[in-house]
Image 1 (cartoon, rainbow, N blue to C red):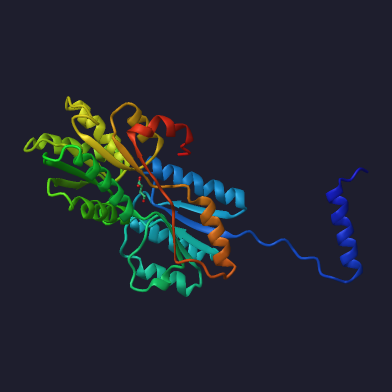
Image 2: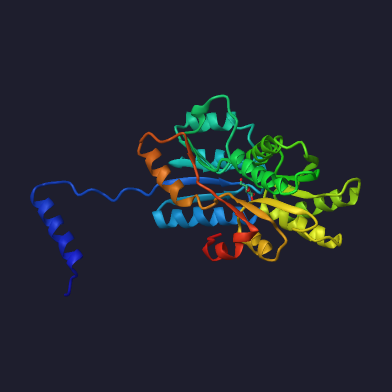
Length: 322
Ligand code: AHR
């Protein structure tokens, strides 16, 4: 019977440990992670889900994945079910910031560590989660604002009327991206947000709300600031249907940096996208292993991200991984 080198080596090892009476270690049980995802509301979210599933597979992590369909109550149910199943670690991307204290206390009482990914929570006791891994949403809003400040500086006399499509009400990215953008544009009194409404991070809602903004006709809209690319893409459709040219008649700024945004920039319909990296899977698996092994980990791990104006879209598109 033919045997390869590795098989022969392990046989020798087994024989020698038996000869010396040493115990042969059983293979370690795979780590079990319960993951509660926000939903499938955007291109970004699909890329995030794919990254987490692929990384778990690659890393030998048993993933119990639950899609909350953008509802906090579904996330709470999923977390409770992970606790009942006694998973090793719970990770989740909270749909909204508040309302997590009770369920996270239950996880803590069950001694199951919780890692937040992508979105943060607002809890009274920070020990209710071990770590957060994701973007700095306030900084993303600032980057969007800085792009507009620079653009406005080319035509200093003009007042610019801005409309804003916010993300899901009460979510960390909606609150923070608004805050960061407003903080920066406050530096130029010619820049004013006249209307601001939630488009729930989806294309359909982004289109619907933009249609309403356009119908109001009280003021010419100069700039659209959308908290994600999907809402911007929905709004682009609304703008075209209203007989206007997106990217020209109305400047469009959005966040995420998904392929759909790069295609819109190449078509001249979007002016800039601020990157928000969804590929958190590999880092999350590594972090989970460290946490379960009892290592001390950083409370906050922030991803590095860039800004992509339309001028660089053609060069950058082949490098995009989501
Ligand atoms: O939390 C990240 C945000 O959620 C992304 O910007 C958006 O596209 C998603 O739905």
